[in-house]
Image (tube, rainbow, N blue to C red; front, side, top):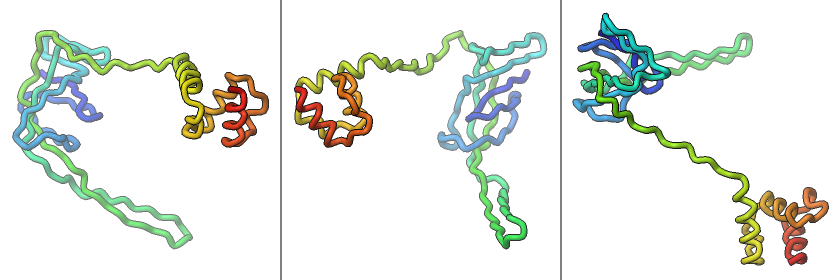
Length: 173
């Protein structure tokens, strides 16, 4: 039985009791972790391909140790210019052992819902703030003042400076 799992943005083909080197995970050594982003599961008889993930499978693993990988050399050179730079780094890695590929009861964690920002509410707030506080115009940005001037139907507001806009808007009130 094997599965293809997404772990911190990379896809790995995993089997039970397999050692795997992945980018460093935030958990401590010896802690158990489960991955819900299972993209494919094959157990010899059944084959499940997710769209994009298989919802009722998880892969359980144990973090054995955190370590650094081999040194990666980054060499930059521009020919005929006398420019060459040699840098290097060692990638932080975590070694994990896959303990099980299991089927869950079908409970799926919900992802965060995207909040929609309506553009209709912004001008209403600007009008309410304008009618309540006249001296609060200095705290507003230039683009907010231009929106207010547009609502008040002031001509030539696009080329005005902030102080001129404040004078023009306050004179209309």
